Length: 335
Image: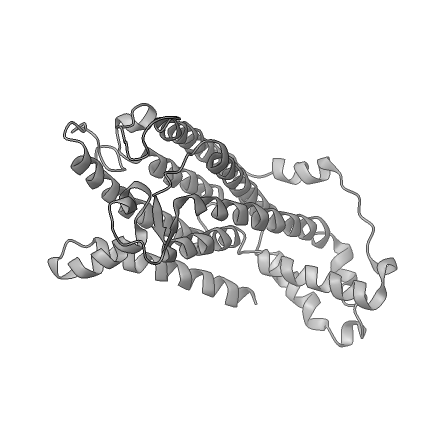
């Protein structure tokens, strides 16, 4: 199951990265392909300039992404916490098969599976990454409700909408891919044991905040330095989103736009995208860079946001004659 899940996640990220990379190549023959990919990626003020509203949804549906992300990430966090708290103890390894119908004669492979994978995955590290993801998606959900006043005419392509929903399901899975399959199997075994043996066979557990926090406090310097990078980007994205949210005040015409200024807007056109890249870079660093799945997740985030930022930068240059010439699209002094 783990190989299948990890393989599908990696294939999905590659499938998302390749069209964007190809569409970004500076070849005139790829102009049509670039246009198709761009049409799928357009949203918000950029999508407004298009007269084709077929197969689009309102941009305010962005909130759906974060509702799904909060629910899904919270579920994964709880599942991973139960797995990390119970499976790491010798009790489980010596008794997993004895609590299932038929005993170890029927399910010997389960015990062997957990013993072999326990050495190669760190469930508490996966929990740490999921906690960072939870902090991110919770803030984004609150911002879509209280900060952004989406223009009623702002749209996004239905394909982009579905891709966003997929992203916020696949991203938390990718951050915990080293252990999440084992956690799901463990949960399924617990449900099976409850069905066949009843509540009396379930192991009594009590929630203790210290038992939850203590293992996380013992994580290495990579995790805490990665968290510092994460919150550096997190704070700047918060500020940039506040600037964007303040541009359209009550009473201002819906089709009126002004040049955003302040914070990272003074150096790039899409600083909220740059901050998002920094946020996921922090997660990569916190994972110690050993998981290819997380690297592919990061590569997709970079490819997608750089592509979108380039189009946003072109839109600003076309929209405003006085747009600051010293601003880059997304990467300061480079692009």
